[in-house]
Length: 207
Image (cartoon, rainbow, N blue to C red; front, side, top):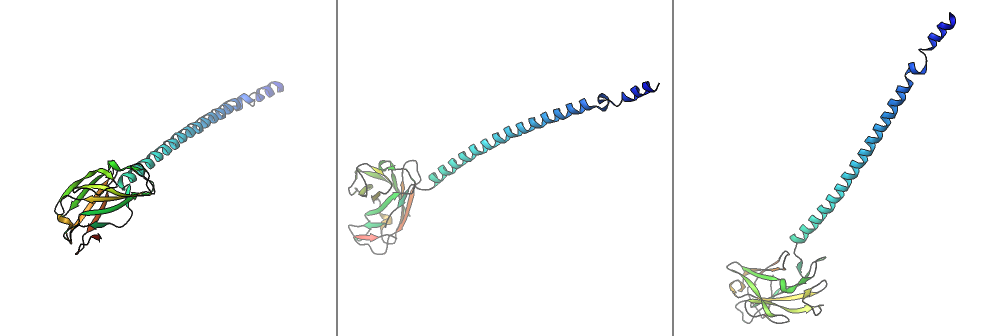
């Protein structure tokens, strides 16, 4: 009688009645879910990081391109002066130019020149020949090259002295103002603004 009572009382106290198998299974399942979350988060983080790096590189390239397009690739490398055959007006405008830091070489034959005055503007054509000559009226040339080689590329460390002879010289008289725009193909223009002094000599510095 007592033995039967003991067996019955021991039954409910066994492992199955305490729910140990169910508790172990739930813990394993939670661990799997947690691992899955970690893996998904890692993959997502990698995708976001990769996209961020690519976006950063693309943004940097766009900014660099914008800077190149916004800034001129040629720069003024010395004083600008006028050369005159008379005391009435400037016949030739002498402008020394070079490359800005980090710019690619420029084929000088791709450069266009505009002369802009208060009363007129004109496109100044290239002289033929272009190198080492005084230009004809209404044309421009490379009068001199410093540190240059035998090609027609304006390269780092070189200086080209441009000689620009406008066809219309109304704004080249005393107290006249004008601007010269020097634009390599596909790049921003260098704009040089000058004022003719009250008296004109054979060689006249322009401010």
